[in-house]
Image (cartoon, rainbow, N blue to C red):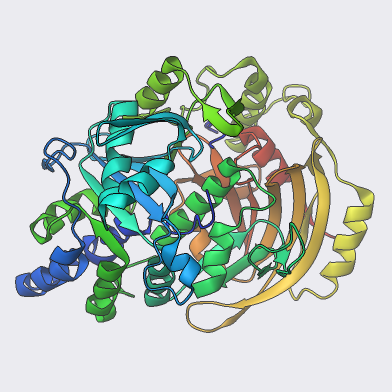
Length: 525
């Protein structure tokens, strides 16, 4: 069994409008151009990149696209609300809730994603004036004084000066655009890690957006999708970014040629209205070549290195990063990243991960039939696992009586986790067939750290449609969905039922813990 390890990866009001712009280009055209006539492609290109929505930047800010070379695209999630019915929204200066760099690298066969903390302390230069101290998301607001595309331009210039990375394109997607695009695509199946439940009121601290989502695998549409990715009130910025990235990863994996070809003109028009960008219609083919390959590759999440996430300067709280932090972040973003190690390779991880590496290494050898004494593998406690709460088991047994397929329950949980809830649920698949499921939720950390054990009567759910590899461990055949070098989902089938362990959004469980918990999940006798 290979060992995957990497550090955990890491908004004003509406984080929702994230990666949609750039990645949807692939969904709309990357898989479809080979089957469409050239005149059709040209029409679609003008739909996606209308001249009226082009960002015109100063010479040198954006480099041309060169075929076959790595390309770096800045994706901005902004909250421009020019057409809002609310006067305050129309007059309120726009903000960039999300600044995300996506690097498409055909030679290395990967797509790397780097989220820039919105509260990062920077100098912002605009028309000869230097703004300091400022958070990096202020660049968009300051630049917006120059018009529709000014915010995106200043944000791009600020990022290039900070990171010394040359951009090949900029995509800016709005609040309304996000809802419209999800609507056009027909919704997304998402694994909701825990219960999100709040009804807005006028009480202080309670007047944020309502959200009503139960935990479990489900189909998110329109406002539900928006409220999920924009949720910000009991999480950190890093958790919100991770949730957002997880949503986009699942969206990307569920958009296919089959469900787009009949609606591609409509969807392309929706995207064209939702985004503004530096791209011209003539660049669509080159972009689709770049992005089409990424459809089958995992998104590698790169963590932004920082020295403090709570530095107080002149009454404001900032994320601060040293020059060395910046260099390390850029190096990791531009490099190939940590690869999956072959079985038996020596660990190159920090001391805190050696036990987990050893555990998963032994698990892999036992999977291939090599006999070892009981003492050869470390006990679960060596990787921070202990017997699951008996009271939680009682709750799961009670739930299982109303679930029409075998419920599995893990006999191991992490020492830091607290059992939170168990419940059953129903959903309809893409063909409208009713599916049954259950979820057992554990809270690993106080802020956003929930991992789940689940099952569903849908053996080919989209959750595993882009699994990276499979492994035989013991008597089970496991399906691994990774996020670069770290396991995000480990799944297995029992007959026509699918079961899995889902890591926290920040991937706080080690690979060894994920494997051990999956192995310990057994049906009630």
